[in-house]
Image 1 (cartoon, rainbow, N blue to C red):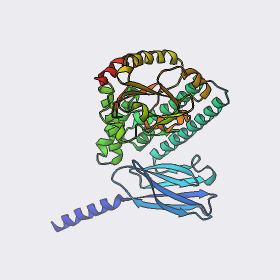
Image 2 (tube, rainbow, N blue to C red; image 1 turned 30 degrees about the vertical axis):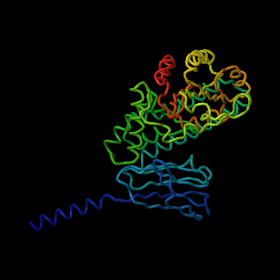
Image 3 (spheres, one colour; image 1 turned 120 degrees about the vertical axis):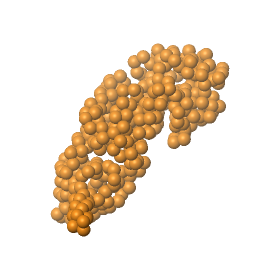
Image 4 (cartoon, one colour; image 1 turned 60 degrees about the vertical axis):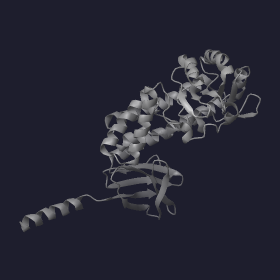
Length: 379
């Protein structure tokens, strides 16, 4: 019996020794003598620098850290360039890079998911560059507003086609999680409140909750998935209050006259339609006629519209907005605005109904039902 117990103890010891509770990121960076390489831990709401090393002429580096029970994401930072990495079952990642092309032409070994993350990060960076070039071309009047928006959405769709492949193939992977939650120029790519996109949140959330139920990352994607589903299933009525996480009233933008008007000044104590739009988009005149009908019907009952234009061309916006009877403002940051990111605006027009306390109570799914949606909150 003692021999059996000894044998079992030995087996358990060997088994526990076979799986390290640490992970290692090591490698070599050429032409980086004297530069500092940082290792950052990417959490749900923040990124923390957890280690660093000053590189010498050899360029060799090595970080060894405690492994979490669930997958986690990390960044290597060198002179404002970064490499995104994931640690799941991997024990050792090896990185080969040159300081000049650190974030694009690196080689990663030891993790198939990190190879996929490299492809996605480079694609995201290239898409961001396309956005900047489009904005430059638009400001130079080389392309019109319609072409600008068309090319912007095509650029995002090209990223999504690659991302969908990783999400559908292996939704429990770190590559799938990474693909789902990226942004381009501050814009959310996969919108949990969009019917087509929400199913991808559901796929990743289900698998991560099954494999890593206690992970903060699992809880994050699960919450996003559930919030989107609840909105879609209840006529897009928000069960949670966005105002608890952002200051809804904290929007202060210029009108056609140039004077700034705060959302709080027009919306406090009223039922308000907060809308992001493009006055130069196809169908905009017809859309504003629909708004005008609702506005005339309900303005005497405490209804107000605060309409934010994302048109890059200020002169064209002024010509289109000058005769509208409600509050018309313009965000000079256009699609790169922080407000676009905060409100998950991926399509235009995008409308939200605010109650008299300044809480977002509904996101407009179909403007065909606008009048009944307004009447519901005026009661």
